[in-house]
Image (tube, rainbow, N blue to C red; front, side, top):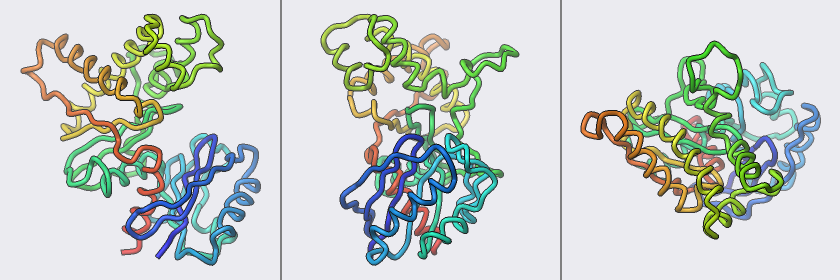
Length: 299
């Protein structure tokens, strides 16, 4: 039995066949429309029509506050044309199949819970380091949705106590990778658009101290929030995902900075130090988790 898995991102939409055991086939990519709802629906219909005669249903991961039981989207995050819409009802007018939709951060968490490094874990946290900070919280072996389906929206954690409304003081901006790349560009006198994860680690591995200092500062501010999340949830594991997590140096530097933060807070013995691990599923986690959400809703 095959399904069509779709991961709608703010820049790209990834999609492909996935079987009942969560095994993926070829993943294809198209640019996510940013202009209008009609363009978005046209894309979803085109993607579905590629596989219409091969699939039992459609499992979707997307940004925004999503009521995963009903498919109602309070908003679509970076997809500004999605607001107060029932995604399932709307998509079923174009794609004549069973459809289930989940928030992308929660989908990634579900994927790790089903097939990854949160499997068997009762209390856990998943953080996806991207343009913002996505992710999810696991409590009693289930992804925490919250009263309004917005639990785990880590990007909006404030990082200071000023009355300023400046987005600079939001976790998602402070530890979004775009800001990290901008800092490296400025410090290394390189065009910021030329900096990505590969270039960043290339500079660091070549001995560029300025690039290394930027990543170290990034990991320190991240470690402060990991400290906060550990004290709030008391997870067994904190999983780090996102494109830059593929390089083992990132996890190493995060762990070093977590140790530093805990030593600053009167010593490790007063607190539980988090166990930090890289995501097992990586970029495939959203689609795998979207299918798990589909299966849970169909039970």
